[in-house]
Amino acid sequence: MKQQTKPTPLSIPLLLLCLLLCLPFVSVTLVALSIADAPVARGQNNAANSTAENNTAENDTAGNTAERIETQCRALVTPGTGDDTAARKQIHATVILATKAADLREATLEGFRKFLEDDTTPVAARHFVLEQLAWISTNDSARWIARHLDTPELCSVAVQALVASGSINARSNLHIALERVTDVPGRVAILDGLGQLGYDEVALTLMHELDHGDDRVRMAALRSLSKIGSADAAALIGRAMQEQSWYEQSEATALLLRLGRRVGAEDKGSAASLFRGLLQLRRNGNAYSHIRCAALDGLAETIGAGALDDVLNALSSEDAEVSATARRLAVGMKGTAVTRELVDRLGRGTASWQCATIQVIADRGDRVALPGVTAALQHTEARVRIAAARALATLGAETEVAPLAAAHEATTHRGEKNAIRSALTRLYGADVDFTIAKALNSASDTLRSSLLRVLAD
Image (cartoon, rainbow, N blue to C red):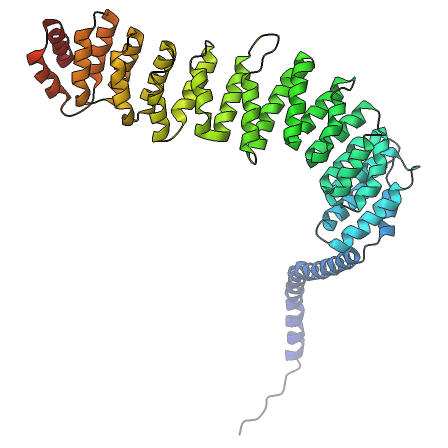
């Protein structure tokens, strides 16, 4: 059995000395650990505080009252007399939240209503509140927003708040306000607001505004009529196009074109009548090509192939811009039926019109037109025959070699012979060259020379 050794007197001092030597290292380790743990602790505290603050904010939002909103509004001041930045931010933040919470919206509207009832508050403050109402205005709030239409400085922003609600009360209050608001900027704002709301019943009221002494009011009435989109509105704009100044006539024309497209979405017949009226428009005896071109475009867009008569009539226009527009539209109309209609009309118009129509047929590239175009090679006028030969170069194949060769034999017109030779050269098909070579056997010397040149090319 082993005996326990007793510590010697010298071993105790040595142990204490070792502890003293190790103490600094232990202290440094503890400090480092405390520093490392500090951010975590602070983060946990901050997270807890943030959660508490969010819960408080949510409870505050849920329990938001009209009195607090009104108090914030009364903190607003006239620019230059104080700093109300914080109040503006708080109000706007509340409004954004109110767009998604019905209860908060009602409370905010009530606070705004109470504030706006006090006409002694700064105009700039009421202006800001009306701007915020554009986010949350309703049918009910339109009634008390409308009273600010009578204040010149607030009329425009009040109109914006009413228009944003898009409500029946907004429309009726704007309509009624026209009877009492006399300043020009206010009337212009109200008229523009009525146009944005699309209030059909106001068309007759706007008719009287077309006779207003200020051109700004007249133009606002025209803009509103173009947005309303009714047949009555179109008739009123058409009247303004004849009676007002050059500037207003031009603006009215642009608005009427826009209106025609809007009307055409629901009533193609009325839109077609509108565009056809523009095609006949004359100002001081002059027809303006840009108006006629726009009307043709609108008519074709609205009724498609139903506009073929109008487009074909415009083909023979002496105005190059109008005829080019008509040619583009005729080429773009889809369907074999359109091509057949074009061919059926070839013998009815003037030589110039027939040349233009043959070119349209060629550009369409529909081979169903081949018999009609081939028949045009027998026309009495050389320019029509030349147009037909050029069209056959695009549409034809080996079957057109014989009629072109016969036309070459029958004419003495140098330009026509050149056109036919060019057409034969451009004909596309696997058997075109063979057919031309076969025709050499029965050709006259003149035709044989042309056919040889075609084969050489």
